[in-house]
Length: 85
Ligand SMILES: [Zn+2]
Image (cartoon, rainbow, N blue to C red; front, side):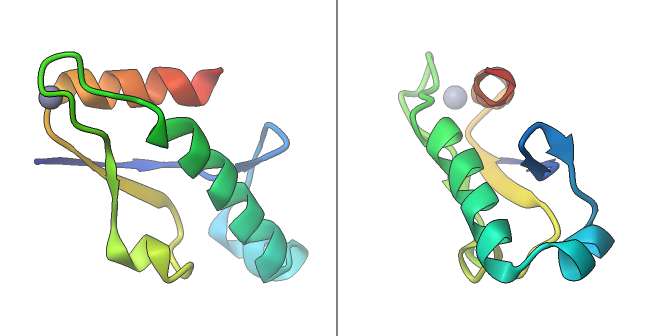
């Protein structure tokens, strides 16, 4: 398993954890996470056919970055590509 973090972006702008607390309501933060999730959830590994799985902490909505577990580098690459779209 490979873990990697993705910076949270809201409307294309990177949002730091400090800013989340100050400028963003929890609702907006969760909407942004949801956006990231929906992009990455559609990605499949070309070798293993598996999808990235989200950490349990992230599900609780209190993490500073979005963390996925991937089966291999190929899936990690594909997920990062999907986020750029
Ligand atoms: Zn794989």
